[in-house]
Amino acid sequence: MDRLWAMQIFVRVVECASFSRAAESLNIANATATSSVRNLESYLGVTLLSRNTRSLRITDDGEAYFEQCKKVLQQIDEMEAQVRQKKGQVGGRLCIESPAAFARALIFPALPAFTAQHPGLSVALRQTDHAQDLIATGTDVAIRIDLVNDSDLVARPLYQAHYVACAAPSLLDRIGTPQHPGELQPQHCLGIFGACRYSASDWTFDNGAEQYRLTPDGEMHFNSSDTLIQSALAGRGIIYVLDVFVNGLLASGALVELFPRWTTGNRNFYAVTPKARFVAPRTRAFIDFMLGTLDAQRRPAHNAHVTVRQGRRGNA
Image (cartoon, rainbow, N blue to C red; front, top):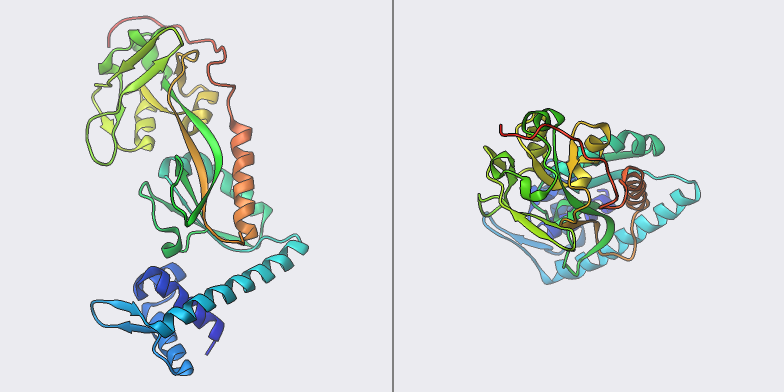
């Protein structure tokens, strides 16, 4: 029996409160996880987990052993990381969680360069707009929007994104380019809504002297920034979306920003990791790489002067 591997499986089972979820996170068969813990119990001569078909409960012996296992496994990780750092190596398997739109706009394009820098590293990326339990899923780092209030997690600021109103040139050629938020026609605007409702979120604009709010009322609304952006690229309407998702499209001219002198709302992106004394080099390397990637594609300061596309004004 590989005791170290059995300890890792046991710890993951306790963290996930499930043999099947632990097996999935470790990419092993459910039967392997079950037999490993059973063999560990036989070797130790104690019952670590009390289980039946409906529940799983850690015993007092199991609780004490679990805490010690975590310390031992962390010490081993630290020793291995120190050796790799001396050799300038970043290796192992990096598990990342990210909102789908962020992954598509920023992580996908950057991953080839990141993995090329670290040949000994493999990356597993989960796209989800519903935050998962990082410890239970074995996630090393997650991209989250807005501050995370969880004492078991550490959030490192990555990027402050601003909302931009933008549209495809083909649409602006057809309906004209509004020069003021008050000229927006709600029926030309595609909205986005949250998880608990179908009504689109309002758009806000502020230039110091004026404030303007609009409720989009176009032909389509979505709960996905990704789908919203694809609809705008197809010329279906004007959208109001975080700049981090469309900076590349704005730079290429595929989308045109409206009202660049107006201030809009903002959201903060964070790299979130489980709280621990030790952060694996692969995790630090990824966070540093994403900071560099975001800095490289960052657009001029919000509300800086930008020439606005002129178009015929009219109705669709």
